[in-house]
Image (cartoon, rainbow, N blue to C red):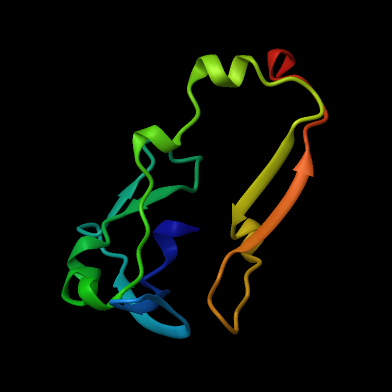
Length: 119
């Protein structure tokens, strides 16, 4: 559980002026004290927001941290028009699966099986 953890270590890919340095990472240990962690208000939900800025700010110029913006998130109108048989690409770390050698996320491709109207 999140509240039972005293520290966690995250790995962030390093970068230079050309972009990410694949396979070269910085390990950053986060103190999971109350000042760094915002627990979910429902105690039955094991979820928290971790304030990373104090830990990563000294390294920002040497870390590869891509960001998404609000424009990158699908709108409700777009989601309502998704039907069955649409291609989906998932990029991330499902169930902790990752490319541990290069510290890169897994890419998965699939096809929707149900309409979003019925979910």
